[in-house]
Image 1 (cartoon, rainbow, N blue to C red):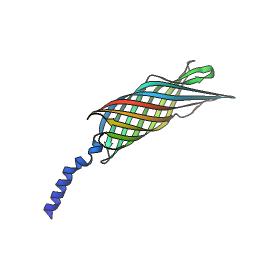
Image 2: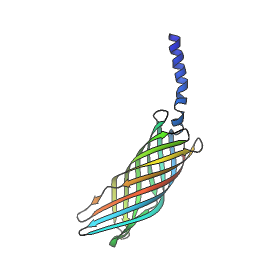
Image 3: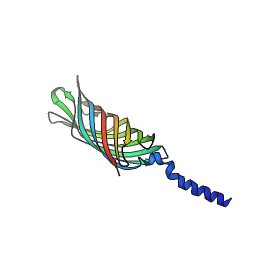
Image 4: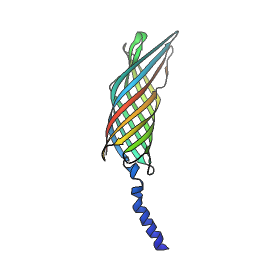
Length: 195
């Protein structure tokens, strides 16, 4: 009986790496550069007047993420991203063009490995950004949230590509006479390297 138990433990230990083979293909630290295309909306409500502007614009982002395998098909990703370049977010009456600047996020991304090449994931993000206007004004939008879905493909052991769609809602900002709102939906195409 003792020999049977020892043989079972050895067999189980030798099979463990193969059991996580699908999720292990995505496990580890990865970095990527994204091209973002965003449909952004800004709004301002001042006494008696409502302004709303929309724009479609693009920029780049840097992403850093660590994926941890939970079992053979499920993973949990932890990461952050920082945007490089402004995103136009519409024109608001007398203040002119609104631009989203210095945007960054921290996120969780639970994923499902369909096989060792394809990973589907969801994303829940904490957001921060600044909005500037053509007249020199600036508003800090912090404590926003975002949610979305994505698909990642491993092209080699280390190189990957991914597509993603996110909906981002920044917290409203209110001052004595004004309430400002900012939101966008973002399509991203990323090329990256898993270390």
